[in-house]
Amino acid sequence: MRNQSTNWLKTILSQGSASVALAVAGATQAQPGYDYFLTGSASDAQVGVALGGVLLAGGGDDVDSAMRWFKSQAQGGDIVVLRTSGSDGYNDYLFSEIGGTAIDSVETFVFDRRSASSDPFVLQSIYNAEGIFFAGGDQRDYFQLWHGTPLEDAINAQAAAGAVVGGTSAGLAILGSSAYVALEDSLTSARALANPYDRDVTVTHDFLSLPLTEGLITDSHFENRYREGRLMTLLARSLDETASANFRGIGINDSTAVVIESDGTATVHGRRRPDRAALVFEATQPAEVLTPNQPLTLRDIRAIEFSPGDVFDFTTFTAADGVGGPFSYNVVNGVLSVGPAIDPPSPLAGDMNTDGTVDLNDVLAFVAALEDPAGYAATFGRPAAEHGDLNGDGIFNLNDARPFAELFDDASTPRVLAQIIPEPATVGWLAGLALLAVQRRRR
Image (tube, rainbow, N blue to C red):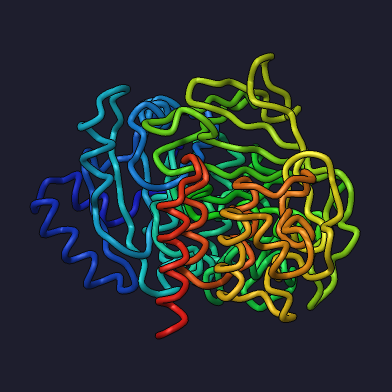
C-alpha cells in the first residue's frame, strides 16, 4: 500500500549508512517491545492495490503452493509477519526459498509488550503492507497484546483496503470474526461439550474483522487433536452471542491450507492426508441446550469435507458434485455424532460399568464389551449398546471408540482410542488398551 509518511528507520536503511543488521539492532533498542527483522528492500513498494484474499493454514509444515499463492496476491509488494515468539523463520522462506512471484520485502515483528502495538514504525509497516501473515504461537498472546490497540485497527484497515491476510496454527485461530483465544487452559472437546460455559471456553467476537471471514470461526490441528467437539461448542456460542441467522466453522488439519480468493472461491492445498484435509460446518439454528454446567445439544450442523485440490464457494457454502458431503453433525446431551440425530440411550452415556461415573474404569468395560458383547451383557445385565452406542447409529462397535474417547480429559486414553479407529479390531490392540488402563489405575 502507498505510505503517507516515511518512517525514520526505513530512511536510515534506504540510505545505506549502516548494515541492515546494525540498523535493526539500533531500532530494537530504541523501540522496546518487539524485535524486528527485514529481508529485501527497506523502501515501501509502490504497487497500488493488492489482490486481497485470505490464507487459512492448519499448522504443522507450511504448504509451499499456498504460500506462493499468498505471495502472488501481494502483487510484488511488502509482506509483514507478526508473531509473539520465534524469530525470522519466514523471511527467507517467503522472500526467495519457495519461489513464485517476486516481492519487495518481508518484515517480521516479534512482540513481547503491548506497547509495541502503538509503535509508529510498527503501524507504518502495517499500513505499507500488501500482505500480513500471522505465524504460529499462542493466540492468547496475540489477543492480549493486540486487542483494542492501534495495531488491530491497522490490520483491519489494510484487510479492508485489499491486503492479503493469512495465518497458521494460532495465527489461523484469530482470523474469524469470532475466535477461540485460549485465555485459560487449552480447551478439549470433552470439556466443551460437557459445559459450553466452562472456564476454558474463551471465545471473543470483536477481534479481527476481515471481509472474507465474517460469520466464521476457525480451528487448527483439527482431527489429530480431536477438536470436532470443541468447534461445535464454539459454533453454538458464536451463533448465540452474535445473534446471527447462521454461523460457520472451518477445521483444518496439519500440513493443509485453504486459500480464499477475493470473490469467495476457495481451494484446498495440502502436503498430506488426501482425505478430510479440511472440514467446513454451518449451524443454522440455535442450540436446544446452551446452559452453564449442562451438556450441549446442537442439531443439524451441515458439514462438507475436502481433500487437497478441491474447490468450493466459501460465500455460498457450496461445493462441486463429488466432494464429500454435505452431511450432518449432531450434538445431543454432550455426545457428538455424524448422521441423523439420535438421542443417547442413557442419561450417562459411557458409564460402561454402571457405577455412576465415567472414568478410566469404563475403558476396561468398553474394551471388554467390544471383545465379548455377550460376556459383557452377562456381567452387567444389559447389552453394551445401552451405554456404549455413543455415535448414535444403533450399533455398538469400533466406530463408537472416538466419541467414547471424547468423554475423557485424560491425555492418554482418548489418544489411544482414537488412533485405532482406522485399523481393524484385533485382540492385540484390545489387550494393549486394557493394559494401558490398568497401568494408569495403579499410578
